[in-house]
Amino acid sequence: MKLTKTLFIYLTFSIIAALLLIFLVVTTPSHTSSLSTSEKGVIASVLILCCCFGISFTLRPNWVRNYFNRSKKQGKNTSSQEKRSFQGHHPECLTFQSHTIRWRQKIWCAGCFGLFIGLCGSIILMIFYMIVDFQLTKIIALLLLPSGFFILAVVYIEILHRSKHATVHALLNSFLPLSFFLIIITVGEITGDLVYGLFSILLCFLWLDTRIQLSKSRHRILCRNCVESCKMFTESS
Image (cartoon, rainbow, N blue to C red; front, top):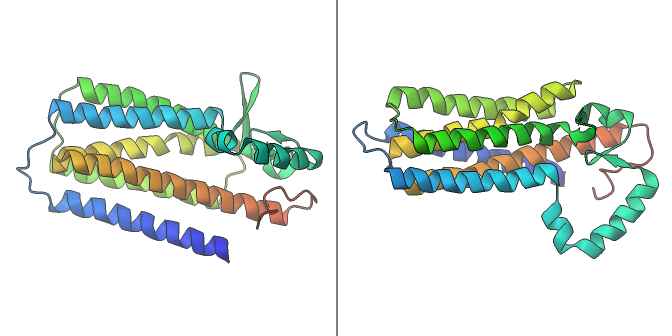
C-alpha cells in the first residue's frame, strides 16, 4: 500500500507539472521575444551537464549511493550474492531475462542501455541547438510539446506492461531523453524566459524519477510473483 501511494503521488505531480508547462506555452503571447544566444547557451550547458551525469548512472547505476553508503552496501551485497547473482543490475533468472540486453560482450540493463543512447543523442541535439539560429513558432511548439509528453506517456505505459523483448524496451527508453529535449526547448523558446527553461529541466528530473519508481514497482511485482525463492526486490517491502 505504501508503494501504491508513492506511485500515486509521483504520477499526480508529474501530470500537474505537465499541465503547468502546457499552460505556460499556451498562454504566452505570440509576440514574446525568444531566448538570446547566451540564454540558449545556459540552458544547453545545464542540460548537457545533466545528460553527462545521467550517462554515468547508466554505466554504473547507484554509484553515488554506493559511495556514501559503502560499508552498508557491502554488507547488503554479500547477503544478496549468496542468493542470486546479478547481470545488468538485474537478478540472473528467467523472470528478468527480458530486462537485459547484450552489447559488446557486456550485459546491460535494457532500460539503461536505451537511456544511454538517448542521452548521447540529446547532447548532440543540444550542441546543434546552441549552434543553429532558429525560432519556434507557436504552432510548431503546440506540436512539439504534446509530442514530448506523448513519448513520456508511452514510456510509462510500456514499463507497466513490459514487452517481452528487451530491444523494444531499450528503444522506447532511448526516446525518453528526446522527449525532455523537445519539452525544454519548446518551453524556453516560446516563453523566452531563461527561468522557465531551467524550471522545465528541473521538472524533467521529476518525470525521470517517476519512471524509476514505476520500474521499481514493476520489479517488485514480478519478483513477488516469481516461483524462485530469492525475492531480491521484495526484501524491503
